[in-house]
Amino acid sequence: MKKDAPTPAHDAPADSRADVNRLGYIGRTPTQKPRDADSWFTPPEYIDCVRQVMGGIDLDPFSSDKANEIVGATHIFTIEQSAFDTPWDFGDGIRVFMNPPYSQGMCRRAVERFIEQYEAKRFVEAIVLVNNATDTRWFKALVAHCDAVCFTSHRISFWNADRKRMSANTRGQAFFYFGPERATFRNVFEKHGFVLQPAR
Image (cartoon, rainbow, N blue to C red; front, side):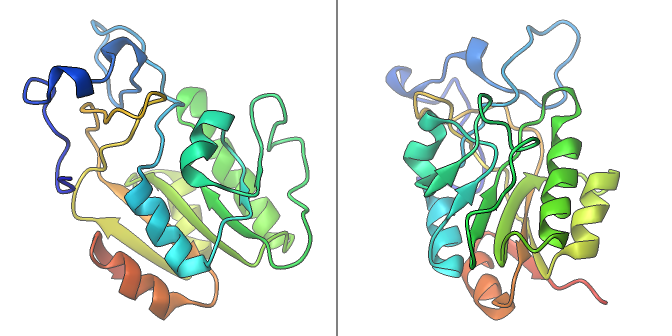
C-alpha cells in the first residue's frame, strides 16, 4: 500500500476508485462541484500508530458509526450528539483521537473545543490529525499547547465512507501529540514524517 502520495485516479483499478461526487476536496475551484469535506476517514495504518502511542482510543469527538468502524473508539460524538454541546467527561485517563471536520469553519471550532476540554483536564492524552495549515490561528493554538508534532512527509490518502482511497488531497498533514509519551510518539510517527517538540 503506497503511502508517500495519493494514487492517481486514472491509475487506480476501476473497482477501487472513489466516487468523485462524494469526496471532500481542499482548495476546490469555483468550477468544481461541492464535495463532502467532512467525510475524510483516517486510514487504519495511522490509527494503528495512534494506538501504539496511547494504548487505545477512548473518545473520537467528531465521528460517525461508519468512521468508528476504522477508529474503534470506545465513545464517539456524532452530528446527532454534538461534541460542541456534550461534555467530554468519561472518567479518568481518557485518551482522545481527533480528525476534525473541515466544512464552514468547522476545523477552527473543533480545535477551540478540543483546547477548551484539554485545559479543563477532560483527558490525559490525545492525538489530533489536521492539515498542515501553519498560517491559521487554530494551527498556532495547537502548536502552543501540544507536546510534540509530526509533519508528514507525504499527503495522506484518506478513505471515504466505502473505504476507497481519495485522490484529491492537495495538502500535507500534521499529527499533534498531547501527553507524557513524547519519546514514544517520536519513535512511532517518525516513519510518517519529521517530529518536532515545540520550545516552551
